[in-house]
Amino acid sequence: MAKTAGNIAIIGAGIMGLSVAHALRESQPSVYDGGGFPADNASWMAGGMLAPWSEIEHLPEEFVAAGAEGIKLWKNILPGELKQNGSVIVAHKDDEYILERLAAKLPSQEKLNAQKIAKLEPSLARFETGLFLKDEAHINPQLALDSLGNAMKKRVWKDADPEELSRDHDWVVDCRGLAAAKEDKELRGVKGEIVFVRNTEFNLSRPVRLMHPRYPLYIVPRPDNVFMIGATVIESEDNTVILKSALELLSAAYSLHPSFGEAEILDIRAGVRPAYPDNLPRIAVDGNIIRCNGLFRHGYLLAPVMAQCVKDFMDGRENNFISLFRRKNDEHHNQRPEKKHNRRA
Ligand SMILES: Cc1cc2nc3c(=O)[nH]c(=O)nc-3n(C[C@H](O)[C@H](O)[C@H](O)COP(=O)(O)OP(=O)(O)OC[C@H]3O[C@@H](n4cnc5c(N)ncnc54)[C@H](O)[C@@H]3O)c2cc1C
Image (cartoon, rainbow, N blue to C red; front, side):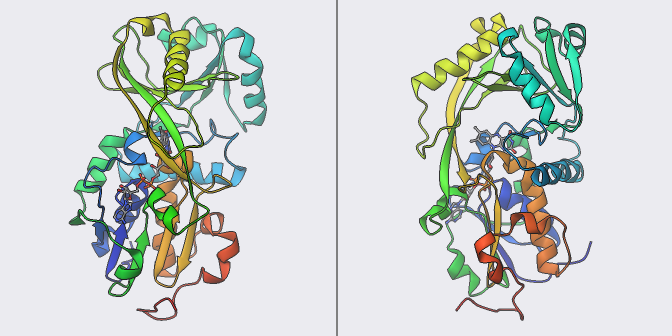
């Protein structure tokens, strides 16, 4: 690995900041987060699904390819924590047309009948049709944040200002998530509500999506029969959970398997995803400040790819993915500073 030179500060210890910190670990960057560690941020609330093909209706094709690269990178970043068991997508009989619509967009998939579903996920034996996306993966976000955060040598648990730090650092990587909306007026928050339940009568080996015209749902398995049920997508920056959402999530889970009727509710929470108007993430370069933001529903999927782009940019190396993330109206800024300590005008 080429050594990235410099005195580097990273602001934000969500998945974006910690992915950059991991990519730049040889330079021992300082990581700042005013929320402490682990902070109560979007990254802490996530499902941890690395599911570019399941997300094909929310991601342009070239971002799906970046997502596949994200899975590859995670295999090296946290090999012990990545589970690549694929994803299963099912629908109730009346909603099978939604499954067919998705299948038509996918480059490849395995179609599942009742026997195949029962073999892969015995708890879903009541479903008759489904899709299996074998290359998808998932990680436990909280363990991933812990592992990445604890590996950092220089951690500063206080708020930092990118402009201020840029005066005495070679590079500042701004990964503040939604907090950057103060200056970045295009950034907005999109609430996602989730429920954690324990259901000892139900087992899953991989994330499952239930396609539904009004209440699409995913369930991600965690250890000890705990399941994360998520997630709403609401144009709001408050992190309260409303009753209607809780009803929808819980009813959809109950419709997936009746044993959810007896499940123990452990927690109901909401996280707020940072998003740009096109719901796609961006890397913007402004002097010696590199801003990475807008990861919306795909923070775990795309943060490692963006982090590698940041490292390659600092090293002056080509990266096939960087053009995906460049801010379209800001391309004249996206050049390396000509000399070290180049400051913004
Ligand atoms: C319910 C839900 C489910 C999701 N599921 C998935 C999923 O399955 N797969 C997937 O890929 N993505 C998923 N996402 C999306 C993913 O969680 C987000 O895209 C990602 O967490 C955004 O990460 P971030 O690091 O940019 O922001 P954040 O996680 O919000 O981190 C920003 C950090 O910056 C810190 N900060 C802010 N201001 C300052 C400052 N001035 N100084 C220092 N620190 C500061 C904050 O304290 C915070 O810790 C989900 C999101 C939600 C809400």
